[in-house]
Length: 277
Image (tube, helix red, strand yellow):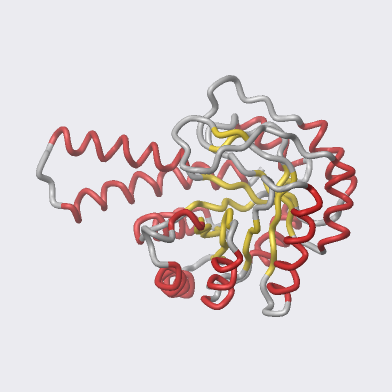
């Protein structure tokens, strides 16, 4: 069934788990995420990033995802990930996204607050929820995200930000990276605990790829309710496609994409099971 991000995060809170938000941008990624969720019997969030607009039309993507979600045996929500342009947010709201992320992490704190408040007002008037980010994650290997400076989230700033903006979910920077880690992962769980004590809305962890299971589970137990995953799934699919092409260079595209989709289902299923806490 097609649902909202807020409903899924409420269910995660009740079960002390986290919802997987898989970055998707075509039919194979959407279908893989939903089928993995069905196998694990847990809802999933389809997260479409602004950076994919030139590759995949936003309105068409929303229409396709809604049809797949409506036919699914699990709850499926549609979320706009890492958007920097108000135009994209307006398009997502008009196209039926249940939540949007305005990423003002590269701005000054004051400007981030100001613009996020505007986005919240616009989204809430249309029944859409908003995610924002305080802090700035670094870019690891194999990522297609924007470069960040690695600035960690300040708990007091986070509390003030949430109060001022009335945002619905908050992405906290606690040591993860976009993409795969270049060094040893080291999440700042004490910092996460301090942030969780200051605010009472669901917390989001970006940079789920390559993060050790024990660190993920500990973060969930400290209040993380949504975890974004992209690069880990991409690498698994690309590796399997390369293997298939090495064995059969002129494999039919439909068969190659089926191979990629099946590989993503397996990878996503493992991730969803881990996020059950």
